[in-house]
Structures are given as C-alpha cells and as structure tokens.
Length: 210
Image (cartoon, rainbow, N blue to C red; front, side):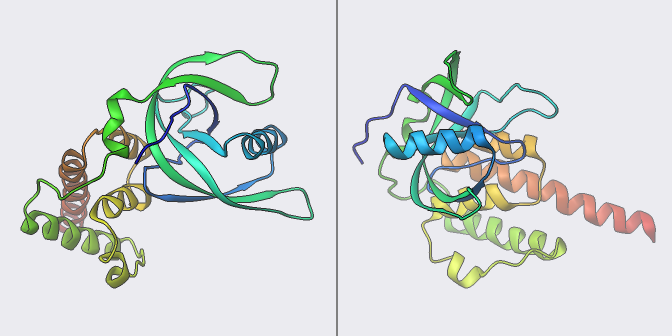
C-alpha cells in the first residue's frame, strides 16, 4: 500500500482509548475543540491521530495511531459521529504551538513501517495461534464479554490481534504496551502472557476463597 504519511498531524488525546492499525474506532465528538479538529480534517485529508492521555494530566504517551475518517454524520445538536480506520502507528517528536484549540504534533513513523506493508503469513505456528484464541475465549467468558467468534475468526489474523488488544478487559498500560510492540508476532506473545496472568489470577483468587 502506497501512502504519504503526514509529518504534522492533529491529535485527539483520550484516556483509556488505545487504537490500532486495521481496526475501526467509532467516535462521538461534542467538545468544541475536537469539533474544530474534525472539521479541519474533513476539509484537508481526513487524517487525524489518536493517542492515549495519561491519567489526570495533559501529558500523552509517546506512541499513537494515525487514522482516516471513513464516515461521518452531523447531528441536529451539533455533534459529529464518525468512524476512524487505523492506518499506521507513530512516535511523537514534539508538539507544535499553533493558534488552535486542539493540539498538533510532529511525528515519525519509521519504527512502525511494518504497519503499511502487505502482511503475508505470520511466524507463529497454527497451534500457537489456536492457543491464544482458545484462552481468549475463556478469558472473555469469565468477564461476560460477548463476541461472535465464528465471524471473528474469518477476519485477517493481524486484525484479530489488534481487535483483541483493543477490547480485552486489561489495563490501559497493558494495552499501550501492546500498541508499542512492533510486530504482530511479538504482540501475540505478549497478549498471551497477559491473558495467562489474568486467568491464573482468577484461579488463584477462587482457590483462596475456598
């Protein structure tokens, strides 16, 4: 996929929202500064960055994801409901001070060139992939999370891992770690370790209660 990645992008910082390439993110925009951001993006190239803000702070993490607005609707009360599709992760270099209500940053993408490359296969063996999905099903079931696994298993494996990393009931810090992990193989192994930890913690807690 040939794509010119902008060096300077508007960024929507949002605590607890970790956004991955090849994944969809619906947003309901109502705050004026972000309405300005979205309107400017629509007029320009429909590209905007999402990044997680740090708790109770104006600071943001160093890695986020560039997205493209694929659909949007304006409501009668002034809100904009839109959908973003993840394109490529980025690293922040510095913030640009502009006379705007929202924030813009200079970013670089070199570390995550992998995101836009054509993904052909994966280094993991099929049994390792199956192990992760089997454990994830157990983990989701214990947390009363519903997912149409039959349909989910039809999508591209890279999209599967990114989707699980987004929606899994794990901490924001763990999701950020997954976001910053470069390859899908590494990300799979880390996600499996995280899920193993939560499953073990659940078993250990149940045993101590008996």
